[in-house]
Image 1 (tube, rainbow, N blue to C red):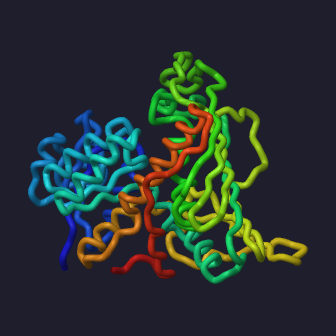
Image 2 (cartoon, one colour):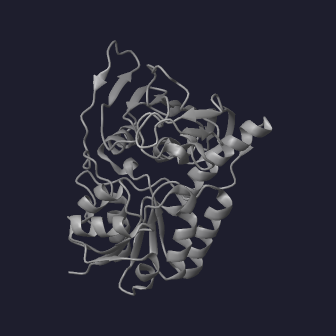
Length: 364
């Protein structure tokens, strides 16, 4: 049986669910893991019975490794991905593709020059929830999509996260932290974005960490913590999206709703792989709960790596493409540019909608 060999760079908290899921895939062999803090790599190697815990240069130099899974912090995403590509490795990385389109474009360009693939989280759009919604839209359940609404609003991460500083630095904030989930889901459901108008602000210039072990330390906020935007899609729909760390007492707005000429569709939280789906057609008095019809409803982080591996083996396109991740990154950057310049931002990139995931999951 032919297998794709994988190495992990970055052994923080999120690596555990990736490793747990990928170690169950018969076509994937996880050979090594590396981290700037060697003890974290050793710990994960022991916990998951990975053959090697090594340095980053050692992992990159290993000729057997086909895919590098890059789970570093956002500020290092592009640099580590470029190193992997320069060593002849395909790359799957956590979102975002970079903290600026300038560095991300170099990743895409280098991959094309070397004939390698770049795939990027979030992969939650491949989960049963979003895929069920995609099928409903494709089957004309709500008619032609006219508009959408998307909301991610909370109080920020300093009250629970052990190291929340980077959420308030350049490349962080609610837009770069959670925006990729919402924008990727919207691109899967509605296609690429044409233009953006946005407003943004920093409500609290300083944040006090309330969680251990840094309780009481002050964070200087560098990036907007409330971003409101209007997105115009090439196929005609318009979406309202709000990403905020400044909503301190909760809200009652939906994660995502799609409004069509024949009905409205409530879409699950795009940060999850499943959730409640509700449909209300024109003339209906009540909402109808729609059962999830597709695979991947648990925490399936790693299916993007699986899909990439199968795509390499079968010489087909992978779904969580670098082009889509770049498009999403440009949209986030475009929100901030629009807000700063007080004018509409016209997107320069585009991408294809990912192919639907089969109901029973990825098998080839």
